[in-house]
Length: 297
Image 1 (cartoon, rainbow, N blue to C red):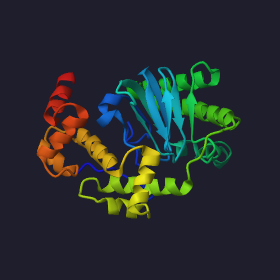
Image 2: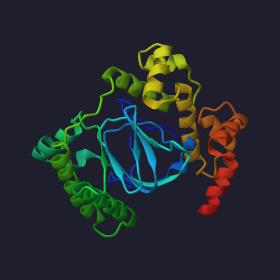
Image 3: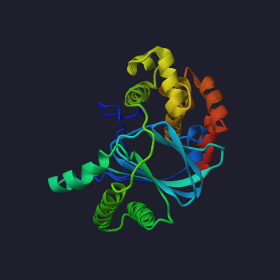
Image 4: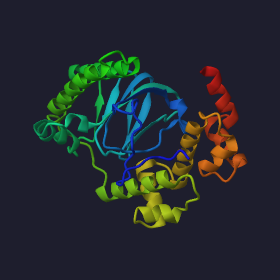
């Protein structure tokens, strides 16, 4: 079973590039995701997305923003977020996740520079514009971290850590001086959303009901649907289906698993229904998707 790993607070356990060095730096396409949308999620890591080609819509705590080619976005700790295509166009991007605790070995650094950024609720995110000098420098640092992580040359870990310190200094120095005018989403609704999303991600492999999802957020069925529409602009059932499809795509990369096994592990009632939903959302059957990926490898 390939299950979503969550901490006790329902935040995601991030899958890093290296088992003993917690850095995630990957390049991807929006078309790699079901319905060209990543699953809504949150974690304690700082997340950065850089757009290489195309455009992307990005939802942070239920509010959507448009990102253009060459721009990036910084997502602060514990913010719900996901990128998606609003018009069906594709986008190539780099995603980098960096855990702030890597810079917290010294209490002085942690208390004076790391925690003030992580706990700044007035800045849940920042869009990075290449025409602004400090933001362009931040984008260059992130591209360098991506390059170092994927080349893995001798001493790359030390180089990445030096860049991470520079990145943290830039965030602390620049973001704290900017006044945010963003309208905040109700904390109680965000807490309910965290819990309901966490419940789905823990239990997607089995049959779950709307009542169970609502109970996880300590809300009624109608309020559950309202919160999903408010924050994710989709129903709980739509989110569940898309999340199951995202997990199925990961399993399709394991040749030893049959389509039937994958359908059952991801909570679908059978291979026929799985194939129908997969074709409707992805544009091909699971077998065709697996074959296409093999040919591209």
